Every structure is written in structure tokens, then in C-alpha cells.
Length: 92
Image (cartoon, rainbow, N blue to C red; front, side, top):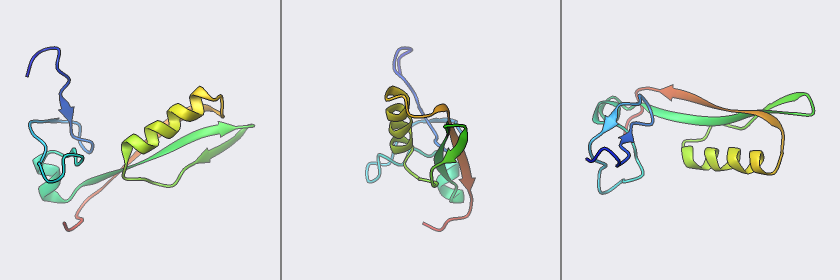
């Protein structure tokens, strides 16, 4: 991997992932998190008219990040933050 090439990080624990499984290239978890059944969920928190709001938990980071970018670019709410929840022991 070259110095300019971005490395893929585990969406659960944040360590570098050497390779993604060809059958599930969107599953960006390290081998340890896969074997232990760890998964991450994401949600968006923001304020609108002085009231705090949050979305439901979602396993798709890109979808939650896209929603955050949409809200920010269209001036919907303020103080946009992503939350992460890690669960363990899911059987796969």
C-alpha cells in the first residue's frame, strides 16, 4: 500500500483492514471483529429550533453520513454529530 493510498479501517474498532472479503466487500470489519461477531451501528444527532433530535440506529455508515451531509448542506438544523454503538456476539 502506498503512502498516498487511503487505508481501509475497521468500522467497529478502527484498526487497519488488510483485505475485504470478496463475497462481502462492503463489510469493513477486521478479522477479529468478524470472528467475535462485533458490529457497529450509527445514528445522526442534531438540533432543530432548539430541540435535540436523533435518527434510529443504522448499520450503514455511508447512509448516515450522507444524511448528515444533506442536512448540513441544506441548512437543516445545527450541531450535527454522528453516534456509534458497538454490539457483540451476533451470530453470522
